[in-house]
Image (cartoon, rainbow, N blue to C red; front, side, top):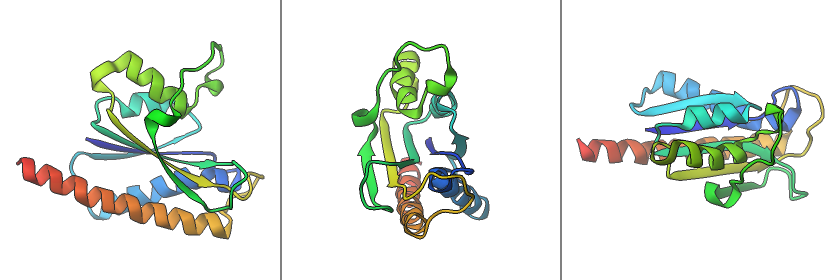
Length: 162
């Protein structure tokens, strides 16, 4: 199973890019159903990422980043590079998707995806707003297309096993 998760906050402009891409992928899969593929909008709930990923062979996460790079820059990073265990906290708001990857591996062991890919899209603004900046909208389309290509190869792999 391939699980794709979009993260972010739709009320904070470019921070919602992961959710926007996930929603587009959900619409695409409604029109072109694909077995063994799930897409979720996990918003800002890192703990949800951990539970939705369980049982998958592969996980793709899409989110915004703010590193000071050019807005719309796309980073495709192996999950193991970004995963980290959370510092002790009693607040689930502090449990992010990078914590979910590390905790999921530790808790769910072999039922957590071995292959994790993270697409980070550099945000231009994280101010309150409901639209993506032009550079981030272009990057969202590029990531959407890249994941569609991954879906095609994933489905071919399934067909070859049958």
